[in-house]
Image (tube, rainbow, N blue to C red; front, top):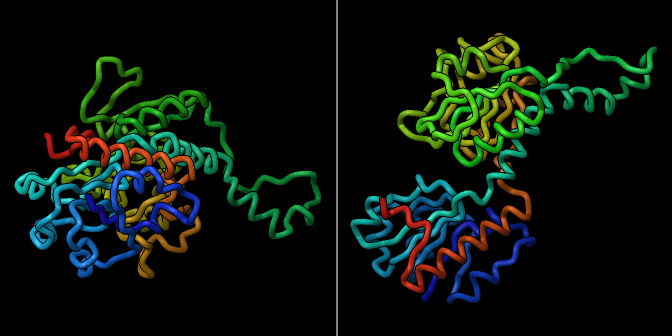
Length: 317
């Protein structure tokens, strides 16, 4: 079996072992192939593994040998699953490989903004401490997390981990979740209350028609002026122009984002350059251990498919 792997550079800088894939079959690797070149890159391969590349019905028809589509990701909205199922193509994702890493990143945002660590570190690097008449100075925002309210939108694998980290810090955790489980230990509330009561609001839901731009002028207006928004899920959950306006006008205190609606960031992104908007380049999932786990599970998916017993098959539903 021959497999074409797209976007290898998105998951490694030479620090990841691809041996688990290489041992299974013939693998051909590519970097940053435009959609127009995917047909030629895949060629006669029976399978393709992608990260963000679009695999739609037209591409499937242009690659008649294709029987398997794997992802280097949990999300698979870039793959037309319905078209794949109609053509007998199996699509497998990699669930829950990055939950700990993403939860860690979200918690880092919470801790950073609780004590304005970025501003204090920048101030010391600027030489301000050397000029201080006292042994310390505290012009930037600082607060204790204990007793503050952490709002969690979505209690999937990542949301539950962030909620547990918040609880460990002494925060009061409230959540809004599509499906409430009987064993849920957190108070579940409606969306309005979630936005109104959260001191930190962290997003952990997939991007769907119901969640697209769920953070907008209307919901932002419900939030406390001291509140912080955190998004490590999908950029499309946020109306970025509305958020930029809210940050400029002091509707909320700050936003911490690891994802944007267009990636890489565009030069006209309305959030670029805002002092109270802290942006990382979609790296919450990217510790080396996490990326190696991603490759290992992707290889397990492919091995199971070759054996005729697919796992993590999203075409089953």
